[in-house]
Amino acid sequence: MASRVRGSPGSLLRWAASLLLAVGVGRALALPEICTQCPGSVQNSSKVALYCKQTSELVLHARCCLNQKGTILGVDLQNCSLKDPGPNFPQAHTAVIIDLQTNPLKDDLANTFSGFTQLQTLVLPQDAGCPGGINAWNNIIYYVDSQICQGQKDLCNSTRDSEMCPENGSCAPNGPGLLQCVCVDGFHGYKCMRQGSFSLLTFFGILGSITLSISILLWGTQRRKAKAS
Ligand SMILES: *[C@@H]1O[C@H](CO)[C@@H](O)[C@H](O)[C@H]1NC(C)=O
Ligand SMILES: *[C@@H]1O[C@H](CO)[C@@H](O)[C@H](O)[C@H]1NC(C)=O
Ligand SMILES: *[C@@H]1O[C@H](CO)[C@@H](O)[C@H](O)[C@H]1NC(C)=O
Ligand SMILES: *[C@@H]1O[C@H](CO)[C@@H](O)[C@H](O)[C@H]1NC(C)=O
Image (cartoon, rainbow, N blue to C red; front, side):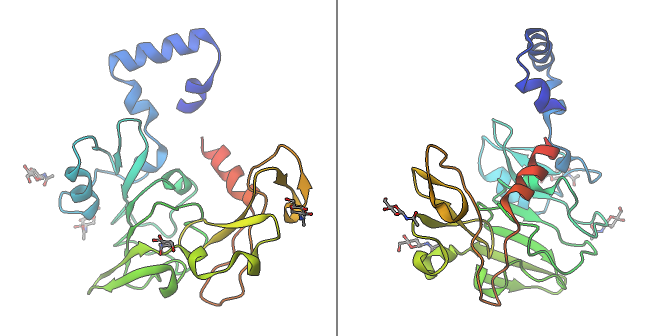
């Protein structure tokens, strides 16, 4: 809703939006739903709070740590009775740190983090597996009632382009344990075989390794993103 107002060409709406901003309400309105879907705010002692307080440009709002542009860098959804992270979760794809501990999460989070390429610290309940498995992270640290998946690995480093991507495509990370093939400039379409001006991502590669998750189709995530905004 808020982003629709921002993106609207209507000058009246833009005027109204800047008025709201001037009044100081704009910020609250623009807060992504993921930040308010759980009651309360980021716990004082949470890793998300610690991360956010390290940098003066970052601010805590509800359950999120945001930069000056409103980009989500941290999300703390701990102790929120979540069985799954919910439909708004892709809004947090820019996050560097996410805390989901003390939630009754279902175990398979493999595709939940599709597109979360910046994620470096993920705190989970003890019984949930780190998405992408042990090979997707530099470190997995186990505690009595939680675990931390630390340092997302770039799996493209250990996979040769020629093995999974077509001739004019190249491998790009797409979140923990996930890869995608991106067509090189000037190519697009199935297997990057079409020549033309589209240079956008075309399809995901599928990996055989049991520790790697199979990506969902790009249009699926794009649609979710579009719905979420
Ligand atoms: C959070 O910590 C600060 C000081 O570290 C304290 O003043 C404040 O009351 C705490 N807030 C809560 C909700 O515990
Ligand atoms: C979780 O939240 C409930 C209230 O919603 C509170 O009573 C409880 O202490 C919290 N647990 C933890 C571990 O923060
Ligand atoms: C991937 O490989 C490049 C070059 O070999 C290296 O600079 C980079 O740090 C590696 N990234 C990861 C996440 O291992
Ligand atoms: C890849 O690009 C080269 C030229 O850059 C072209 O000759 C070749 O046919 C392309 N391969 C495919 C599979 O489209």
